[in-house]
Length: 333
Image 1 (cartoon, rainbow, N blue to C red):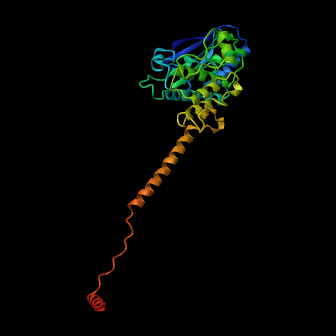
Image 2: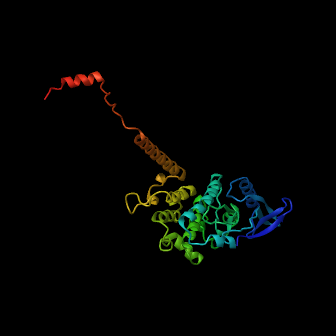
């Protein structure tokens, strides 16, 4: 374990907080401790609705610690998380749950930091869930803390979580690692199992050289496009994954609105170039404009049908003199 978590009372704030204490191994030089304080200070200033607030950090008797907001509902590994996020899930539900997590990670990346250790235990539930089909307030916790332990603290690769990208075994970290972890989470939600199973070295070999088992036999609701998108995010080469974590989830969102096929039964939205994947907002605008034009056309047709037909005025009744004259002009038999 990288750290231990406790529910503790903060006497200054007057509330319960989550206290995470890093294990004392190995002994860190002062330069590493100063780096920890600097990074935690920066991360504490990053504000996002789906990022848990970092309340305090420090060094107590040689052990680094952080405190964050306490959430009674716990994580995806807790009783509430297991009860309401039972896999396999419908793709539309799983993708909606993934979006706020991706937004939180993208916000972290834009500030120059990565999570580095996203997994089931640090995805928290912000509130009790009454309807899992609705988008819930899932939160990303421990941003930067575990990454520091892995990257600077000399954490052994064998202790990396199941969501770790293969390059992390060689201590290579980038935002693509968070995208990989998010893809592992989605795979589990859709399949009810992890894509790679075994001992740490076996899992690493699978991640580097094997394609994840197909989702479609495990979840018939998963489309070809969704599976292709997921496989790209799980590519062992970080350069071949999506350019950002937002591009990954936007591609997934596109499968919920676009047809499954584009003139070719073997080509779906996921196999199109990344730049052609439309965003959710743009798709809504297109559909709204199309509906507006259709409504205008229908209204014009109804107006045309309701207009009275052109009436040809009847010839005026002939006067008595005209009738008399006409009778005189008719030849006698």
